[in-house]
Length: 331
Image (cartoon, rainbow, N blue to C red):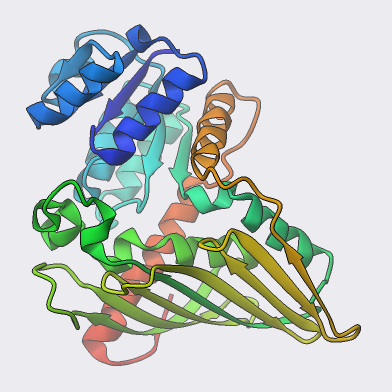
């Protein structure tokens, strides 16, 4: 398979290194990025085919699969360009900053039989799969309430560069807390299903020099009646990636930072801790890539589909509308 990676920032370079680690020759990888320094970094990894723009890269040869790691506002337009050429797509999250061209994107991938996998990496975490197993086995009975939080100080994300130049600081590039930290929304969607309504707060609270939002607070009702409280922010100094699930027969705690899942059984008054998970988070990215390749070859279906990405975006857009109208919004 021949791959084209659009965007050679931190996540793009990670995907390229991982492709090479699983046996893809650097000669089968092309990288695209407008920044010369990033292309040089990719060259140092071993990739020789590098381009500053997508159009030139696409006329240089044929590709089986593309990985879109560009700023969020470019995702759908670049996805359409790849899909028109029948190139399968691994789309970094979130899907977009709006859904204006989503119908054209959907029509194009259907017409050209293109696979789209959304890169919601926490679906590949063994912690998440353990939680899904516990829920399936009725470990806490009927789930009533979920509380999720992703909190991380923006300047710590990429300490090797000025956070103010990072796309996350730019709303026009699709940056901001509610979009980029939508992992937690997708986790809840993955575990419990679709969203019904939302009441939200979203904006800026910190002194960070950004023109994108730095926090969101969502109260969401799911289609199955579960209520979810979802918090994201880019200013929390003690980084948190946590999920708490409250059921009629106990609680489940998912904690990515501590790399463990805790289950409290109220009937037996027993707490069980599951923590024999690998500490190498990059293994999740490798599993994601291997799954993507199998999807491209038709042996598996995407664990995180385009529709999953659309539904998370619909929640985010409804949250924006809730903030604007100061009201509960049906999704």
